Image 1 (cartoon, helix red, strand yellow):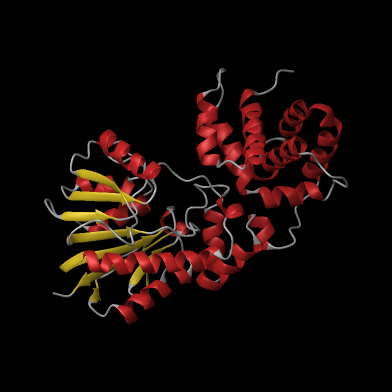
Image 2 (cartoon, one colour):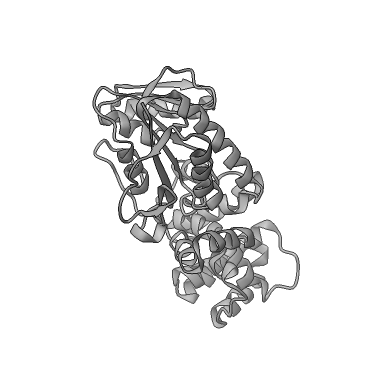
Length: 370
């Protein structure tokens, strides 16, 4: 029987991602572009992203029926087969037979294990395993959001995101589009985006008629901003490479700090991020966020607007950052936060993924006193 090319490419991508510790959202598009046969690219993408997202759950499903150490290739065949059986609803004969075709010398083991996965239900040991998140992320979100909201957020982030294309052709989640709109630049105003890469929000600000200085500390990301500005026709956008804590700019009408963060609101777009980030990163990132905001506050002209945004939902990177600014910068007065589906949090607002099927996001708008 001929091997399904989509499944074969997905398995090759999974093996390579694990072997080279590559990022799935960077490796897979290149892998697909080099494919020399016709295949279902959407299905291949779902297999790769879904198998990586649900890795912990898939390992538990197959681990009940495996008593020896597995090599990388066989483990990925089993994970991908278990993902199809449990989460895609693929008929057992199809999921098992196609996995056997990919298994090589381990075909008998793969067939035996996946048949048992198909025949046995999933009496999950806990919700973290069922939803396939590290224990620390599960616990952090439950503590910070409450159990019901946390479960809803994690369940939503286990599904592929919808695609939203702006009029200029740029594909961008609605949460990010709403954040750029909240900055609200007027035509002719000077706007600084201090952490601009890859340029989605910066190009949206330029589309409103503002003169945008879009910077990033990494040359590669600043180059992506430049390229996206050219592609979208953002003629009033200029890029620079620099540390947002020491911006090489003059007083500006509006400043956006879309800060580096834990990214726990965009895990469905970055399938391997949940397995990469360490618990200690949140404290380090919160320190960086505060430093960026101190610099941004000095950059905003009197009467100007500072907007802070992060694509995460932890208290340390949202409410606690607002508390820091409230205590340290009394010259920054809160602007009304965006309305529903955003929910007030501190002086800003948080958007949960399940509220409008978007990324998780937090925004805070502050007006500098004259």
